Image 1 (cartoon, rainbow, N blue to C red):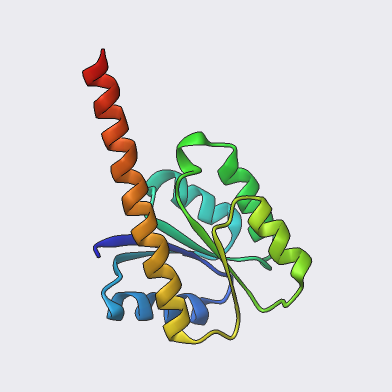
Image 2: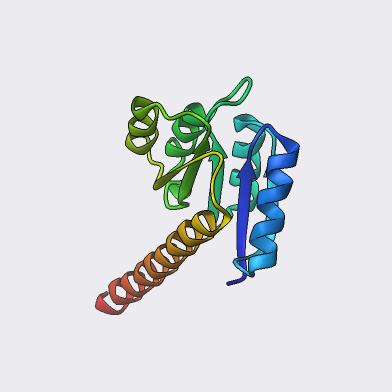
Length: 143
């Protein structure tokens, strides 16, 4: 798919495992990594990846705060974020979705589920990008 995916996770082993899985599957051509929400936001702002996988529970800037920071920049809001956490707390899931996450995966997860969810959100982002481009072209032609 040639996607650039950012993984924000405080566990280096988990980041690397997810990254290797995405690269091996062919869904990601490039994997970016960050160990907390602040570092992740800096990478997001600079690199503008196609998708973000973000842990909720991290030291300093957690996943919820990361979503708030992302929402403050209009050009970053279109980048889908899949939240990842060991918590089964339904309120945390709802809070993440209300703040702009597109999906939620609970750890430990099945590799096939992660790949399926990533594939779906990458396809949706691709279609939304195409639609935005077509709408911009139509607007230009209308003028």
